[in-house]
Length: 109
Image (cartoon, rainbow, N blue to C red; front, side, top):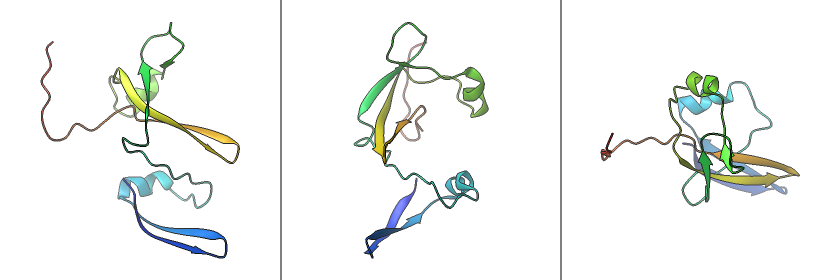
């Protein structure tokens, strides 16, 4: 994840120096404008959304083709999310998959 290395405020603007990894750099490609910077920690994604089948109005649905393209076989039942409003636009950020590195979690079949 990106990390802010420095913030400078001058002439009514804010300049931010970021440290990003190669995967994030590849996502940016050649884009130098219209970049959205959002926090994605536990304290930022404060709303829980339910994934699953249709029939309940609060569910998040994604096509299997899109999930398969990114190697996501199953989504978690409850996913953290938040809506960020900026300049009249609203952006929904959802963490649909979490890395489970560290302590193993055992579940029954």
